Length: 120
Image 1 (cartoon, rainbow, N blue to C red):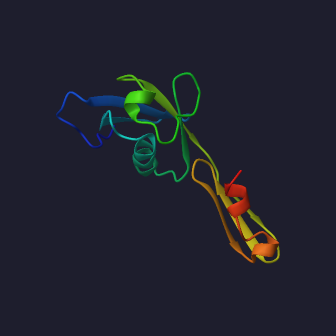
Image 2: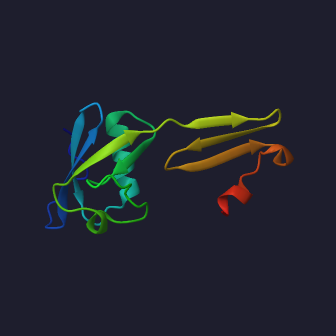
Image 3: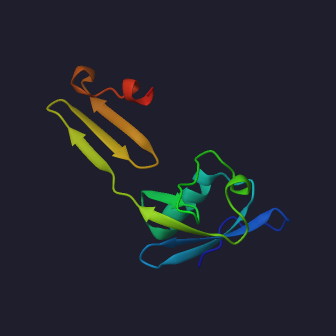
């Protein structure tokens, strides 16, 4: 596996991430690392653009949380590969990517504005 952001301090922790295919990677990270940073490293390491990280109990890891708050040393995480979804009207497009949110473009009266959705 790959070692990412290796730390020599006592705040380092080992995290193992496994895809459902069985492929896995080991990451050595600082406990203050945010979940979204680990997710970005995993996406790059696995070559997958959209991953959702699941804790050992099957619950998604909370975006914004630090690994210290979310995990114990050496825990095994599961990474689900999620497919982005694209929807279109004649004059607008919307792309939803799991874990990353919604992006819309085009004429606002035809669905090209995501502000109302983002406020929900």
